[in-house]
Image (tube, rainbow, N blue to C red; front, side, top):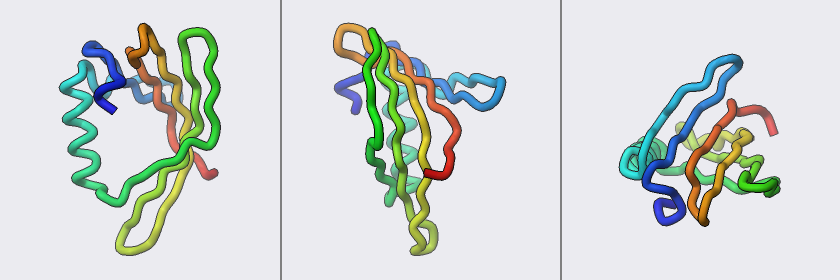
Length: 98
């Protein structure tokens, strides 16, 4: 993943009328992903839908993980801004039932 992100990447969470900057910069993002997969080692995801419009890529992702041996799942939407082959910004939306 880190090979595809710009050094100045910004990752935002969108929830209702609030947008929160989650990480800023390549190193911050890398640490956040490392921490996430340490906390939830069973996490994986699959792209259900993807489309490119101009310098943006929109996705619907289905995430899977286990809690006490029970598999959980949810979908979420994201929009990625891509410049010169690198992701420069991400807007990640709340999860929903697939």
